[in-house]
Length: 164
Image 1 (cartoon, rainbow, N blue to C red):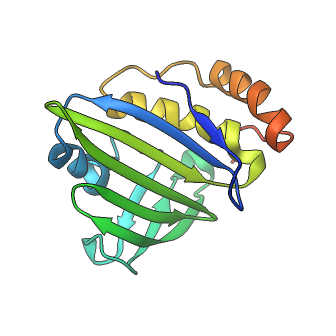
Image 2: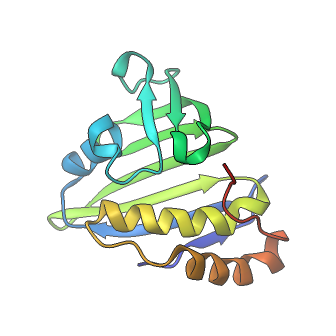
């Protein structure tokens, strides 16, 4: 695991996470854009209108019955295959930046979010990115507690997981 960083120099806080992945950007790109591969690591099912990641395309995020049938919507903002993908995820904005690093990929995820979601999302993205890297996820609650202790002085009280 690599520690998430909280940036507070913009209009909204941004959680930033990095990973070194063994696969080249072209392979990682498939993992972040193909529905079947996203299901293996992303926290919900991702349905891209028309099945093509293009600027302006709408996206539906289905969390299924375990989250009370919660769904979010979004829109694609940037696509530069296989280097950059950015889209909204409900009221958040996600950005995936892939850079060649040796035979693998330097992977950076940023999540622009409401202040009270920083620790929850950092802990969740840690788990997701562990799965993306082929690792067993860690203990979410321990990660959340550590992030909350670090982030609360910067952005205020932190919310726990959503309730179904």
